[in-house]
Image (cartoon, rainbow, N blue to C red):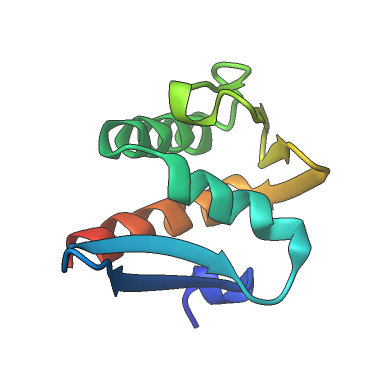
Length: 114
């Protein structure tokens, strides 16, 4: 089982009317993790890489590092580090393990590039 499956996330690719393929993430089981799907859908490639690097640092050092992740694409959300978890607050609290979130971000990167 992929980590994304554990959180009820589904990665999809579709073509628009101009035959351009785009990727998106949907949540299929738990509304608690809709925030994770929203983040994946909003992040640009360089933001995705930055988020993975920050989480990697926090995990390796068992520390929060910065207080959280900030980027223009998700400026409407609060993404706070509270080692060993990440607290995502937009429409409600979503607490997810840092390591799991890092793996989901990596799975998303692989999916988008496949």
